[in-house]
Image 1 (cartoon, one colour):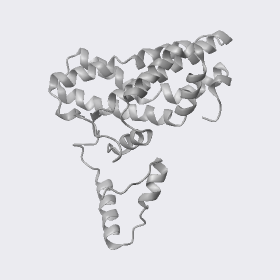
Image 2 (spheres, one colour):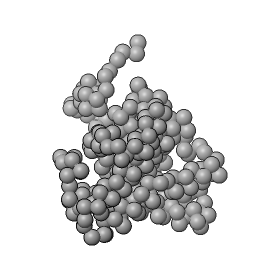
Image 3 (cartoon, rainbow, N blue to C red):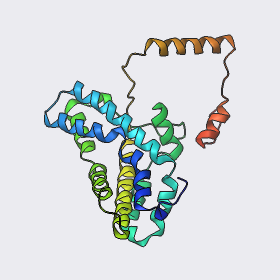
Image 4 (cartoon, helix red, strand yellow):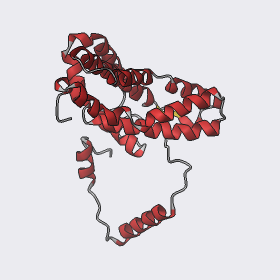
Length: 235
């Protein structure tokens, strides 16, 4: 985030918000709500949850870069005291590092320095899985997003702009709470899916290049540096 959002006009802030509040997570959530109301079976819900989870990862990608600055703004304003308490509650129970959360969303594998998720989503009984879907579909994040959308449509004013920014911070904190909630769950959205022929061919070619010694490999140290983690010997 190149600019402090506290300096943005109503129009500029609305533009900045667009990729965040228009990501696919919110369309998937609407479909999930409808499926739950129809008492859809496990297979149908599982298919939609794949879309929901990938939408969540997309939202997380949009918020990764500005997260540090947003947290800093939250901590410096007395008006955000209730939100500060909620952030503190999240940080008090978090088990994973920032780099670990990013790695998990990218590969569904935790860093060796982070604990593995305790709950395997695909092994949940149908009734427990349905309750999980209901919990996620009713998360405060979605009501906070609707509030943002309504405020975006109001006529620009100093008060209206401040209300819009405050609504976004409520949305942001609810996202942090969702992220913390999901860290206990292991879910691979690609599990059980067949590889497209062209992807399978590319993987086979890559494996062959590695075995032949002609592949350009990225050193583990470089990967660790990009993720911001320190390597340590486990032997």
